[in-house]
Length: 147
Image (cartoon, rainbow, N blue to C red; front, side, top):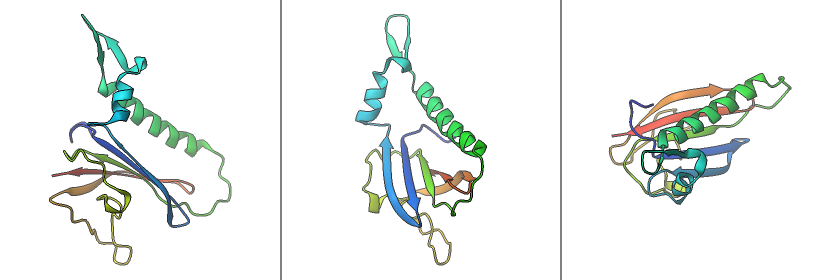
C-alpha cells in the first residue's frame, strides 16, 4: 500500500442479508476527524522545538487494528451461522478530497451482480482489489483507486 500513495479516504460498508445496513466514509484530507486525531497526544511526537503529528503512526495503528480484528474473528469458535454479507474497506489514493454521498460514491457498486463485470465509470479512476478476507460471518474486501 505504501507504494501506491498516501492514504486519503477510508470507506466502510456493512451488509446484512444482501442489503446494505449502513455505510461510513472517512476522509483524511481537509477532514475534521483527521484534525481531531492530529491533536490527540498519543499520535504526537516531541521534535526539536515542537510537537509534530506522525500520520504514518496513525495509519499503521489503523491497519494494525483492522488486521487484529480479522485475527480475533478467525480465532472465534465456529458456530452455525448464515452466510455473511459484505464488509468493504476502500483505501483511496485519489486526489478527490470531497466525500461523496452514498449513492454516488465510485465503489458503491463494484460490479454488476448479473454479469459480474466491472461497471465503474468515474472520470479516469481505475479500481483494483488488494486485500480480501472471506469468513463465514464477515467478508472484508479492500480496494485501491488511482489514476
